[in-house]
Each structure stands twice: as C-alpha cells, then as structure tokens.
Image 1 (cartoon, rainbow, N blue to C red):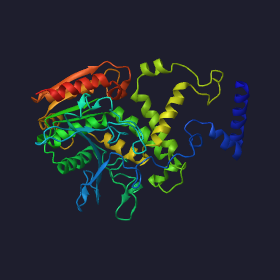
Image 2 (cartoon, helix red, strand yellow):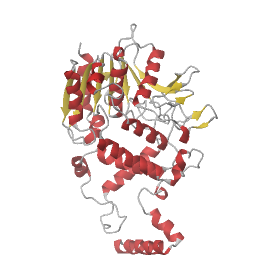
Image 3 (tube, rainbow, N blue to C red):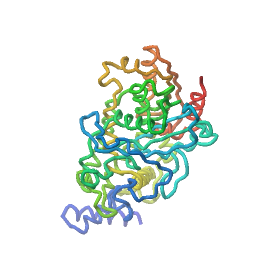
Image 4 (cartoon, one colour):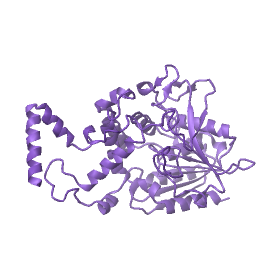
Length: 421
C-alpha cells in the first residue's frame, strides 16, 4: 500500500516536470494547505456580514456623521463597533471591566458557540457568573476591534462611499486607533472610568495604550503575555505570515469578496495560521502531544505523507478560515508590528509616566513569542517612574497560548487584582 502511494506520487512529480496539466492538478491536490484540500463549502471570508445571525452582539456607530481620523493619516467615513456585555452596570458606573481581545479573537469572550458565534467564548473559563471575572459583580464589556471582522468596521465591511467591501482600500490602522474607537463605546455606555482593563497578546497592547492614552479612565490595567513594543523577532514572524496571504493568487490584492465559495485566499490564511500556531505553542507541548506520530503509520517516506503535527496545523488553518478574514489578519497583524508605547512620547519612561493605573502583568514560562523578559520590562519601566506594577510568571507548557489555556492561574491573578483596593 505505502509503496503504491509512493509510486503514484513519483509519477505525478515526473508529469509535473514534463508539464502534464492533469498530473499537475493531481499532484497539487496532495500538497497540504493547497486549496484543493479544503472543503468545497469554505466561505470566501469567515467575516460576519449584515444579515448574518446577530447573537449577543450590539452595534454602535461611533462617528456620528464625522470621519474617523487615523494615526497613519487616513480616514474612515464611519466606524461601527460591535461589542458584547455581561452583567449589570451599577448606579455610579464603577464596576465596569473592559476585556481586549487578541489578533484572531472577537467580542465573544464568554458563552457557548452557536450559529451566531462560531466558537465558544475565548476566555469562557475566566469570565462569567461566579468565575474569576465575575459577571454577577462586574459589568464586563468586550469590543470587536476596529479592523476586525466580526461586526466592527474592517476590510470586509461595506464602504459607505460606494457600498462595496473596502478590501484593498481599507486604510492602515494602529493599536491607538483601536483604543480611540473603544473609548467612544465607553462614552456611549456611560463609563467614564473602567474598574479594570484586561487583555493578553494584542489585547495587552490595547491595555497598555489605554493606560497611556486615557490615564484618567482606568483604575487598574492588566496587560499579560505582551510587550511595550513589538520586537524584531515578532515583526519577522508577522512579515512571513502576511507574505503567505499576499502570495496566494486567490487573495486578489485584497479584493476577493465577490468570489464564489471555495475560491477565497484559504491557502494563504491557513499557512499564516500554521506559522503562528508553531510559535504560539512550545516544543514541550508539541512533543508531548504529537511526538513523531504519523497519520498513517505505514506511510513515512512520501514527500506528502503526514505527521500528526502537520494534520494539527491543517485543522487549525481550516478552523480559522471559517471564522476570520484574510484582510483583517493583514491589517491587525501589521498594527501589532507598529505597536510601540514610546512612539511620539520621547521615551519608554515618558510613556510609562502617563500611566496612573495600578498595573499587574504576567508571563507564561514557555512563551517564545512574548518571552517573560518582555513582561518583566513592563514592570521595571513602570516601577522606575514611581508607578505600581506587580508581576507573576505562570509555569505552563503551552507557550504563548498559555494565556488562554492556563485559565486557573490567569484567572487567579485577575480575581485578586480586581478585588485589591
């Protein structure tokens, strides 16, 4: 059986070299992450579109008829923010907690999956009734970021100028733009000051900018598994991921929304996700879960025979395709690269002096993407200018994803932090 498979592949390879079209198609079909391997029913974009089930989302136009100016110099004629809430705002609006999501997250931080919300809440073990961030006590808000694809204005949204998806003309945004849009949601909800603002990874970048941009609007902030500025290695990983999307011919320079199902930039987005998934986890976690196990124990030497870890990467790629948008990935990933809390503020110390909130930061011991020294630097810089910042390192084997998976430990930090006077 295995020998027959290898012989078949060798024939395909020979035909490809000789320019045989049918053989080329057959050979490509065996390559992992090639579009022919994906389900025919995959949407061109996994974005939420008007007319889709709303679920727990609420929407607000934060521009009130005036263009939204962006840090990089562009403008958006209108900005819609999709958000979800849990719990009840108290009479003096002092129990509000904002949770900021990471790159491929959205506003659904707590709750079950459904036709409206394709995945269970990404911090469901931490946020909810009786949990670490207790929605019986706190009014919890999570906003789909500007540039996202689950209801907030992003590349998949209709441009009101021509009533077509923005696609390639969506402007560059920054973490600061995201935070300014979130502040307008807070205004709408009547929240002048958050009891706490919490987030990890890209969410942690937003948390830090909240502290620096609106120092009077947060009592405490908790940026975890994040950094004061994107490092050279983080930028390098991001650049390779974005390139895989841009190199997918089905990306169409960002204008793919009118393509038929199954004809979207699936290979590019799935490969970008695979690259990210490798540095989201650790060698320890991969080795413990997969080792050198094969999908087919009798198939090893063929070029496209599969190890279990390869199948795992394919699974997560297709899963992301069903709930995310390739252009949003590009826009938000680039916003992460430009993150630098000191930009335009003279120095890290000057930026840190702007933060008046009490700060708690935490690391995942095995995180190779946002290693512990970066969170230690957050503590060091804030304390160096007289601020308050605690730090904890969580022993967890799951790498960067530990900030999502080590729920008991992360939740314990948040619970204590929220209760501190």
